[in-house]
Amino acid sequence: MNVFNRIVVILLLLFSIPLLLLLIGVIVFPIQAADVLSALVGGLRSISTTSKLLFVMTSLLVLVVDIVLLWVELRAPAASQGVRIKQVTGGEAEMSTDSIEGRLAYNIDQLPDVIRVMPTVTSRGKGVEVLLDVETRPDIDVPAKTEEVMSVARHVIEERMGLELARIRANIRHAPFPKRPKETTETA
Image 1 (cartoon, rainbow, N blue to C red):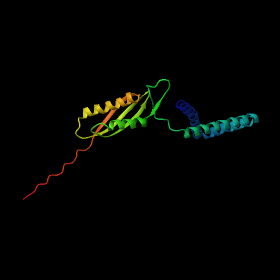
Image 2: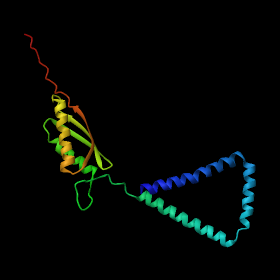
Image 3: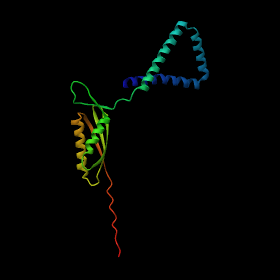
Image 4: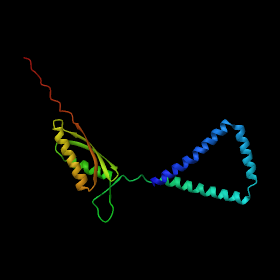
């Protein structure tokens, strides 16, 4: 459908550019445009009834096709945000990015010191790009925890889901440190 849409847009542009140039000419040179229009109307009087009927029928057919295409384009469901599974033989399988995000969130959330994870998965060609927004406890070893999170994500994507990982990125954010209770000093 994408190729068809591009063809339609190109044809519309090729039609609209000369039309706009014609309208500019009519606005800039109204007297000359009226003379040309008068000559065209005079020429239309000499066209046979059969030719006029053929032109009207063709125009109506193009109008109906345009209306149907517009209706199909407006009613078309959004393209599925799916990713092709590479480890399937004898057919094709696709998984939605929402499912991938849910599974990543579940598996990474199981790691110790991870409070919350919000994965964002984007389909890129044959693979997926993964962005992980991870909230952790404030006192973790950041490089080690980042490596662990990315390792789990890579394992889930490539081995357990059979997808190709194009890129992975993690944003680590610490939860705030707990507030210490204020010590009260008693004065005697």
